[in-house]
Length: 402
Image 1 (cartoon, one colour):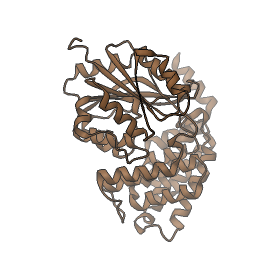
Image 2: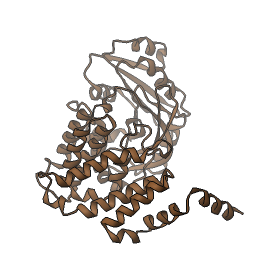
Image 3: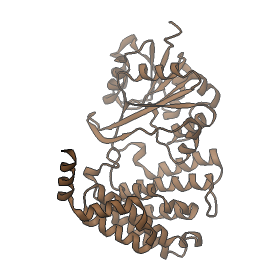
Image 4: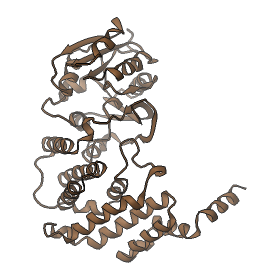
């Protein structure tokens, strides 16, 4: 093994994913980079996982353990691994063939980097591409704070030097979800993690996975935040602590919308507002809620977005928030500004889906709540364009191309 080609360990934790495990293993075997060791940790599967793994013979190392959870399976693989570089690939996900070659090269080009993360595409159970792609570049200095806003990594998109795990510790086996977020936060706080702009992994969306249980996800989010920034604040504020908890409740609000629990969704929305009122003034808050019924893998896909339908629960939650006696006074003072930002954001979404009548209606209501919105460039230009109509816009574009 030459110094230029360090050994990479890829750890594949598996629990009853026999139908996907072969795809995950093959995605590592098909890498354009060598040397690689593949460690499959079977966490007490009762399906044909052992048989699937056995078909690969000595190309992989197979470890069976009594069921102890995802974190414990990953930790078993970490302890057994010998590589200088570590990838963690869940059994239902896949690497693109150039994943290792690209990310090893990124680390070799930047020896001061302790890890690298890449973009990823969502796919369905049959590995068909879904519209959603995540690829968010953040400077290493800002990554910890960005991650406190919410986890935008998936495990297979992160590639770390072994020393990172050695120093920040392994996966927390007491967490039943968000255990990867906890590790990425620890790593980003202490080490320099860089971004690769390439889409190098495929993240499979499965019905019934842990991420489809909003209560489990919320409980885990709050547990992770308590570890990293302290207990949930009892009053409103705009500190890093307040923002982190507010964003956690926003994420759960969206998940409850996705899975049809309006009361729980409102409870999380009010929690978000009462903890960090300033989130009511951010476009991203309403972008997420305006895409609220889009399932994972489709979030933000304008072709399938129904802004009119999605606006109804959001409008209802906003009205209820400001009428609710338990809503903090600091929140109620923001009523007109928050409503203006909401309508502005919904107008932008409606414009993006070419629902021009709806966009104009939302823009008008934004200005009614805050006249200064009229001078916001993103509102004014799109309002004018929506007045022109789609057919005239296409004609103007055609003239510009001549």
